[in-house]
Image 1 (cartoon, rainbow, N blue to C red):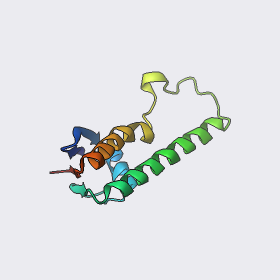
Image 2 (cartoon, helix red, strand yellow):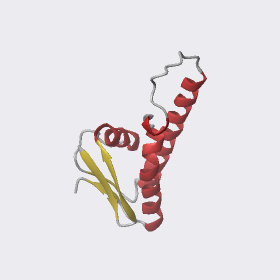
Image 3 (tube, rainbow, N blue to C red):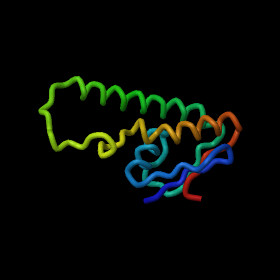
Image 4 (cartoon, rainbow, N blue to C red):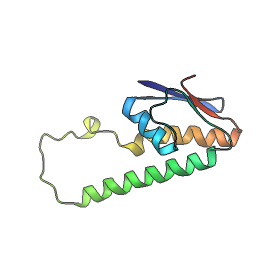
Length: 110
């Protein structure tokens, strides 16, 4: 599933499948809905929810990095390494913050 987050306040943010569903969940929206909106009134809470989810992801990754693990020589590194939730969320967070500043909603699936 391809999801495009849109707002008159900024450029579109495009996400695929599970990444988009994770964002919906973080925003408090139905992860199975093909369409949706973050209204101007909902933007402050949505931004805070997404910031908390980013912080939680970073904390979980830091904790995992501190735990001793077997060195896997075949583990992906650099550009081949998996993209984290926090990395995927930043463009959406930027769009939400621009939308709040401009007083515009953010929609998807329309």
